[in-house]
Length: 414
Ligand code: HEC
Ligand code: HEC
Ligand code: HEC
Ligand code: HEC
Ligand code: HEC
Image (cartoon, rainbow, N blue to C red):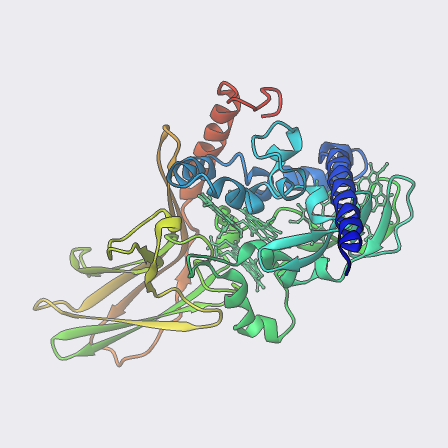
């Protein structure tokens, strides 16, 4: 190319970049807040408001971690918000001056995605709504069918990521390598319950509309479906041998999944006929991280390796054996095994919160002179330990909302 040619080329490129920036800004301004969908999509709006997606940026557990992360490296500001406030990918509003930036994973973000490439999303026009039907008729917005939206790959852009080469959240690959992917069961099939109903106020009745709660580890009732537990008690001379089998029977990925340090704790206890404790032990299933010095590190952006990962894969049965000595004269043995899901987190300056949900429990008694048989386990109603946590979380969100606005934040937004 001649130097004149190069000049013209550069000038055209300049105009193109200028035009792209302008139209990007214009597009950013048109992103609609979720409340603007509420008048017609009331159910979806109400569900989403109560979901962790709506809390993704105001969640006090995130805020506390985010503050620590950007102190350690200011570049994490944009990075963390990619997933926790994904409209910033389009608006670049990293200081939350727009109300939509505080809506976390919001309607217009998900419903205008055109493609996903690792942890970054490709967007289409802001006024062309992507959905699972494609035949919607409304004056409110144009719509188009999106196959991507109905597949796990859509969720993977946020629910799978590494930092410094260390896999932090692996929910998508845990699913992909497991039996559910092979059967074609997507994240949406478990996390967005399909029911018969109306998608919009003036819409037609549909065979399937999809609930927008995205229940997960923060929801007690949802966790209760996760495991099956069975026990077998045997006598071996003066010893008792108890075998517990724990099956991840209903979860499409490892349990726990996602954010490291979530724990499932198995508490085991054996008593004699009079209720006196003979033996107690516990097992912890979790994923923990090490920093470059080999010390355990909670703040995942400082991790340089996975310290351990013994979480239970989808459909996997983990066997735990407890062997202990029986006291003389013990003729009856009672065992109790409880599985607890634990989420421990530092919540701003308020407190260190621990959510504990009892997800499965079995109790069994056995006369030791009988022949060894495995007996059916009795399931008890789990204790509502998570209610306290949810109350604390809501209290903390309200606390943050009342907090004085930070520089660049609008007080009426939060
Ligand atoms: C995390 C991404 C995400 C967010 C946030 C989200 N949606 Fe959806 N939405 C989906 C997916 C995925 C489907 C299709 C599910 C499927 O096909 O299994 C869907 C389906 C729908 C549908 C189709 C019909 C129905 O009722 O199920 C409507 C309408 C809808 N969403 C509206 C909304 C509104 C309004 C909001 C905000 C209040 C919102 N969505 C937030 C991902 C999202
Ligand atoms: C004035 C009413 C109105 C408003 C406001 C509105 N919609 Fe809709 N939307 C509808 C109607 C009506 C349908 C068609 C429902 C049907 O056919 O079952 C629809 C369909 C949809 C679908 C399904 C598209 C498909 O064909 O798969 C999605 C997704 C959706 N809307 C999302 C949104 C989002 C996100 C917003 C806010 C940015 C929004 N809508 C605002 C009325 C509205
Ligand atoms: C733009 C990024 C993004 C996308 C896309 C996304 N999520 Fe999320 N999701 C998040 C973030 C961030 C959180 C955590 C919010 C928090 O705890 O602060 C979350 C939380 C969740 C939770 C709750 C976990 C818990 O601990 O209770 C579930 C379940 C979930 N997402 C499922 C999905 C599914 C299914 C899809 C695909 C339809 C999806 N997500 C798409 C970012 C995303
Ligand atoms: C077969 C049903 C099923 C499928 C498929 C499934 N999940 Fe889950 N998921 C669950 C159940 C049940 C829980 C609650 C137990 C738990 O927390 O591990 C859960 C929990 C979660 C959590 C919270 C993790 C935790 O341990 O606190 C996230 C995040 C999540 N799922 C995202 C996803 C994503 C993303 C996909 C797709 C790649 C997906 N799920 C596929 C059933 C499923
Ligand atoms: C690629 C997307 C992505 C990026 C980047 C990301 N996160 Fe997350 N984060 C998630 C998802 C998805 C969840 C929910 C996962 C789950 O529940 O298992 C989550 C959960 C969390 C949680 C737990 C919230 C709770 O209530 O339990 C904290 C804290 C957190 N992220 C902090 C950060 C910080 C700080 C950064 C930046 C250093 C960051 N995240 C970057 C996707 C991301």
